[in-house]
Image (cartoon, rainbow, N blue to C red; front, top):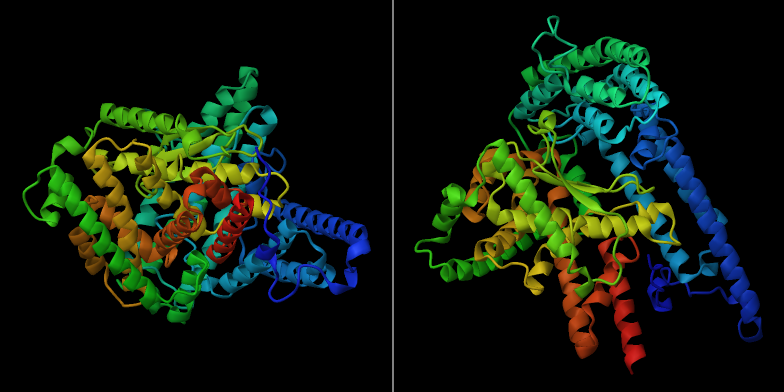
Length: 618
């Protein structure tokens, strides 16, 4: 893995401060000045490492996700007190950094780390101040579905100690979910209620976890519940005596019945109580200080100061632009009718979907894998830096199909023990049409999320908060930008799949319209659905699921298109200013080789790349 790019001195001027303090001298004092810079930079990077380790020590679940073995018998502290402590700790770290370190004595890369750490903490504190309006449980995510998924996918069992740790975590479920339940109940009493439709979905997802053996009195002929199936498979795979296996499995069953089941029964009871009093109002505007809250979420997700009205207008403009390109492809395939009629044709003609059978699902997975492998073979044409970690395609587990995203990506383990994973939800094959699958694979896999996230994790010489952190506008903006890259090297050979790439793009453009429509302009759920059905080709089931996602996750959906437009703007700028000296591979290195950054910092990085390239070629 290549090391991070050197940055132009001009890029990293901190506010109006010069690069070096005048007291460091110049001329003959240069060796001393360089020594001071090296020492101060190393001291701050050591401090960043200590803060990362301190934060990691507070989250045994994160350590497991990162592929570490310590703390496998514990779950995180999920209480409001722990969340408040995190904010207090963050504020103390920011104060300490500002007090203890001289920004004028840092090398360029460490100065950028200082800026990014400062910006991250400021954002964390602003987010914490508004966090009472963030729903604890939603049908898209939350501890009720996230915890079993975490245990199944990330808690490995290679030894009896690992199995005992898994059982200890099962025994801790009652406390973990109880803490989340207390937070959600406190929220509800303060006026933070989800729309009524959400409660049925999260109740159903919770019941799925405790349906089947060993939660059914008569287990004969009953399928195993997800967690029981998982721990049984992992224990039975161990090379130990049968009586040891039996002991572990009996302990696991006791934990499921004594901790997991009552925790979920209690959750479902709370969901039912809240649902009885909930309304159908959808937007953030209904929440306490709803307008300020939504503005905070927009700033967090886009890393810009764009207002809801400005984002709405950008969305309308982009939808119109992309529809023009769609019309061109519709003409190429000689479809007779309106664009809306073409959308209906794509949604309803059976040629565009795999059969809704196990065979159809297997065929989808096979083709998605081929798409990824074809792009892997072409990476050298567009990239210098490539990830060491592999990536695989995997189907979303059936127990969470009802509430999981249509597709998503999980990063590889830091120690190489787990590849990056592109998950695709195949519950209903009508919601995963063939014409969208190529762009979807590029977005979630290669050259999208896997390229950006795996490269970031593998960068050398940067503090962990940069290599493992993320800004939604950057990460999702890159993934959306990446959907079109394979077109430049001829990988979109089917006009319908080329149309699908535009469909994915307009999908994100329309998000700017509907997210701000719901949360700022008081659109109801059905108005948002109809806007999508009238303007994008996605299947209705997919559309409704997406609208329901935006309702419970205010602002997040706006980050994709805002980030993608900025990357495209910066690429155009570099192409114009560098002319024949523009190298797409070096441009992509500039975007990816410094980890995730806010969009304003990304612009500075590209400006520095342009300046350096000009100086090298003159």
